[in-house]
Image 1 (cartoon, rainbow, N blue to C red):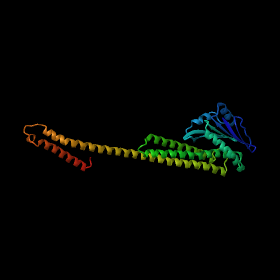
Image 2 (cartoon, rainbow, N blue to C red):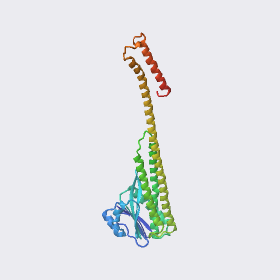
Image 3 (tube, rainbow, N blue to C red):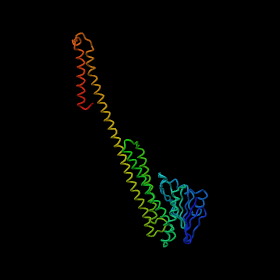
Image 4 (cartoon, rainbow, N blue to C red):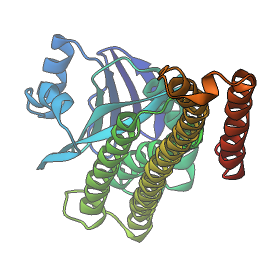
Length: 331
């Protein structure tokens, strides 16, 4: 599906479909392609001299990557929010003399809304930046889209921080099962995001440094500098969040250690009680066993108080042993 925003003779228009204008002179067009068909890819490749194979290749890139500088063709690995989930995709940009082409491999609501928002705001921006050349205006358009997208990354970072807080709460709670794998996988996710942000920041740095055909004046250079600094700030935030996750692992390890120590202490107390009870029972059993041997030369067996004396001895010995264990807090 194709959408476009054009500036022809100072008049700005938007539209859909393959009937986008082919600007000349100081006119320009921004073509936004969502999951373009094979025919649309062929048309874009032919009209704007973008190698056709790049339309399939960019979606497989792991990080932001520049393909050429004349025309300027590059891809950025980007993140967006869909519902409550953080998702990622790649965007292809091609900047020619009179055109900016943006390609999204899927039909994503976020980028469609972003395109509409940038087009609406850019019409007002053109009124205050008439001094720029048409290439300067295209650079301004690229900045408007890129800047809006990178600012939305703060929403993503807020969601990652909320997820870390939940992991920390789970790690510190005995009643919640938190797996180390869940924490380490999220840490790897943040590391990958940081690497992709850094690769995107390098692309911005290449543009602001004048290493592309884009001619940037001091104002445009400062605008791209702002995008670059936003990426660096977000990378710093990701580093802080990774440290928070490391702290979560430490909290989890401490919680496990405390849980094991508590369990060990409980088992130790149980063993003490079982040992004390066993010995208390063994004392009268020993006495009964001695008098149950029935040797002929055992005067106590014939004494009239022998039975009562044996019971009394068992009771006193049992109470004495109980007292000794209780004194040592075993029972």
